[in-house]
Amino acid sequence: MAIALCPGSFDPVTNGHVDIIERTARHFDEVIVAVIRNPQKSQSLFTLEERQEMLREVCGHLSNIRIEYFKGLLVDFAAEHGADAIVKGLRAVSDFDYELQMAQMNQRLSGIDTFFISTSPQYSFLSSSLVREVARFGGDVSSMVPALVAKRLEERFGRAGEPR
Image (cartoon, rainbow, N blue to C red; front, side, top):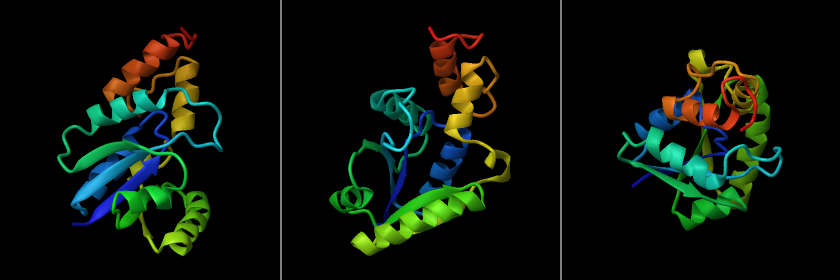
């Protein structure tokens, strides 16, 4: 049974994330969506539990998906869960530069391979940080995130972008 990890902070989960997860699920027997708070990013908008809950709901239609939390090294998490591969979505060449380094480090540390899936063109501009910024200032992100996430962002920021 081939198991893949789709790691990320998912703060918040976007339609681009869901696209990569769905496409990964077509190629692997099991996909573990591994949610982490990225220590290189500023404070999270949503808690780990909130992000896991949103992912469970938006990926509920996929029978071979599991949502997990992790901290520490991804390769250690992969070994603990018997993962065969890491899958990452790439939006642009700038993503590849960073992700290639991570893939090579992970391969060196543990022997695990990373597979890259190019983001579908309609999502190539999306990032969680851009979605957060637009939502914070009252912009409409409903076409960029699942409906549940748009609702949660509206609850968090209000219609005019004012924090509640």
